[in-house]
Length: 383
Ligand code: SAH
Image (cartoon, rainbow, N blue to C red; front, side, top):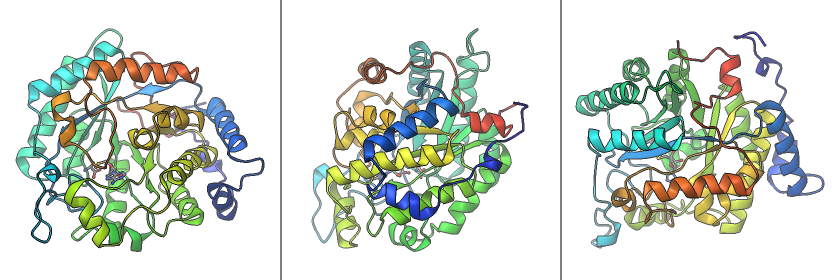
């Protein structure tokens, strides 16, 4: 296919009612048939390979107050006079050399790409820091196999357009910003001002205009969210023409963030098993509907089941994000309770994650960026 031509313009989504029924567990023949259909679509559109992105959680400092998140701005503050030591995340930002060590680890492991994630800060010092580390990673990970260095996905929240441009010019070529839910009212219940649904959508549009490959996604198991709401989320992904999707089950937050979540009636809906099943169905239906995008089997799946990420691959996901955050910092980056792998080192995670792909008979991309065919077809590849 010629670059710039697109299949997605001809992409026809299944009707919302049909997707809703599948998401509610009413696919003809059951979830096993749904998963096989998703795998068939995956094989035809993106192939069997699993692309790795080493996930570096480089800072938990955050200015935002998302009620569900364990690193929200005031996590650890006393709630009604009670302050529990275990609920206070020790705030950290890795040094440049720690970040470069992690990048080299990704390079040596053959991952080809890394994701830099943090809480949301917009101050000039933070922006300049991120810009500098992007340039250094690019400069220091250029090899014969990766002539343009590691592929970098950035996940540092909402920023001004000119900041997104600076990050793009410094070498980030993919950006993850979840919409969290495509229902504006539910978004407003989950996110205190100044965050707004419209601003988040605008940020996604700006990222695309700048030339990023854009990823978005939702949490699964939010209060009031059933099959129909999830089907509308998939329609939203199509409407904004996302290249990548990252989604996972919604999980209780640790410490004081849990108290806030509970106080606002925002606790997850449905049992752990039901949320996991829904999350897997969501991956499958998204694959069937969106076809040629990259879809991650996220860490949160594994928080609900030891083999959650393998299951994600079986339901049509094609990206894994092994955590490469230094072991000593992992317990300070607990977005939700029961986050796996927090007592492990990057080396152990690397071996483990490659094993997970192998156990479901999937090859792993070595030394490649693993961009989504959807992005390539749309011409969203950095010059
Ligand atoms: N500050 C960045 C990174 C946020 S953390 C940003 O705003 O994009 C990455 C993702 O973790 C979030 O987008 C959210 O979907 C997920 N997350 C946070 N708390 C969670 C919880 N309690 N359960 C499940 N996922 C959660």
